[in-house]
Image (tube, rainbow, N blue to C red):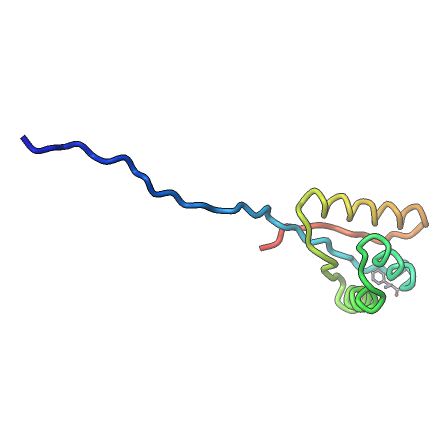
Length: 101
Ligand code: NFA
């Protein structure tokens, strides 16, 4: 009779899991002063002055601009902190998050 024993599978695939990233998006409005937006971007997202200016102007002209990408928790926390900071100063400035494709 034929030997029907099989060998155990020994090959494995090693993967490093990367958490899905989420974008923080700055949304334009007609009321928040440009200088306040730039100051907030520098303070909360640690972007340099020149980059903060580009992000603010892009949102101002196009309606919205991606500020940075983080893991979901960090993106949500930072967008909430930044939006709350604007509210405390009486501005309707809004940051939202969305998953990266
Ligand atoms: N549109 C605002 C203004 O003209 C500036 C602004 C830019 C607000 C980006 C929100 C986001 N004062």
